[in-house]
Image (cartoon, rainbow, N blue to C red; front, side, top):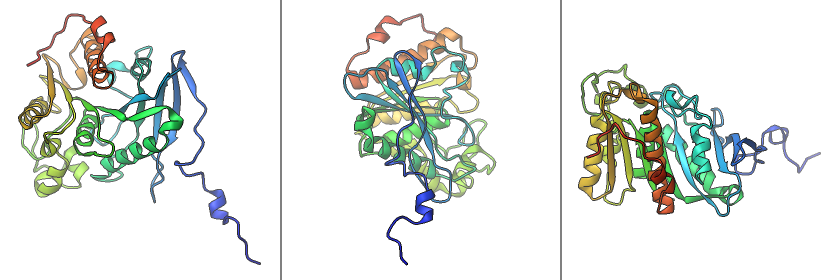
Length: 312
């Protein structure tokens, strides 16, 4: 007797993320809905990557999208973590962004212990594909997407903004992200196979210069790049501030728009900065994203405490 229905394996399998029902929303604040742990792809031989989606509570129209990418040297990190200074905020940073009218997708990507580059960038493209596919159901306008990342996530946000064309991104917010994996700097050698950069690539950058170049945002700069906001601590000993200054200069030289903001007396992940300065960096970054997709930022105009920064 031959059956025409699904096989046992097909019956057991969870629905594909393209068709699966969305989880019931939580409401961390009255203005924000949260869909947590939504699978966005089903890769062969590895865990299904997930994203958290923060949505405005009662949107009148499809919301522009912030695609948030966490840090952690490509080795660790959590998709719902914007860094040590924001962990105790109430409401948290993603609820604040959603309350400003954005959808926020906090996206898993494969870590370097799971797969080497370009797997991480491939994951982000898959996440965008899923968000485009489900955009009408979610109430998200993926044609107005701003990538926002910190540290390793900033590196990936820059790469995505410079290389993704369908749909092209509206802009990028990059906090203290690496932009050039192949150049020696104080405290960093591209010949060292033990660095996070080497683990990302699968070998020391100097041993595979083509892959190092492919993974370096500065190598992908072009005149039609979307606007960038680059923010970096001047005393950063983990990712030198020169990564951001050089990427900003390269973008401007190509004819693209770049805003560079450096923060004096500040280490990686804003160590050494006051709570007021970190809050101002966040508000300035959110205001930059608002201007890109809404054309104005009334919240930024209303939030102008004194800044301890330099802005060329």
